[in-house]
Length: 249
Image (cartoon, rainbow, N blue to C red; front, side):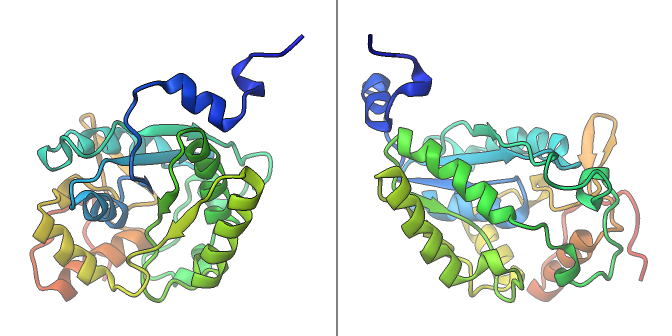
């Protein structure tokens, strides 16, 4: 007897079941952060349909990101070319210790260097789950948003090329992992976002967001908030972000 359950189906079978559903040209890993929000608009700029993908792994700030992502995608700039987000789960709380700062929500201090906020295997997890979902929809490109100077081993061109090859082999479906902003500074991403009309004030780049009257705000005290403030200053434009606390500097 043939098992016809979705769990046993091959990607091609699932794609056939989708019928006339339009196939996006690209999936974009999007957390509602500034970089990934601009990346989403950047990928959709030529009119191609783009699928935002959000992967929940059990980190402390994910509820804030999900709420922010819904509000961000309601912006007119994303109408017509950006699909509703695909939300996936791959719980990593059985791997990361309960004492890990990203699980507890104890964000690194304001001037903590990037090297000290590494989450082991972060991009490995995100890309693996997203690629399997993309195989089922016959999407062959995944865009991810690391910037210039990213110090992590899973954010290098060599890594993205290698994991793209491995995923393509393992899924029998071609997957190209692209990082269009890999040589860009954050200030350049801000400039691109303004050029495209991305509502940067609706993005959330914070490791300890605070909910105030139903709206998630940047804490103003973590290293991501410092990075955001510095980038707006370097871009020479006003920072539209509402911070719950002033800079500690």
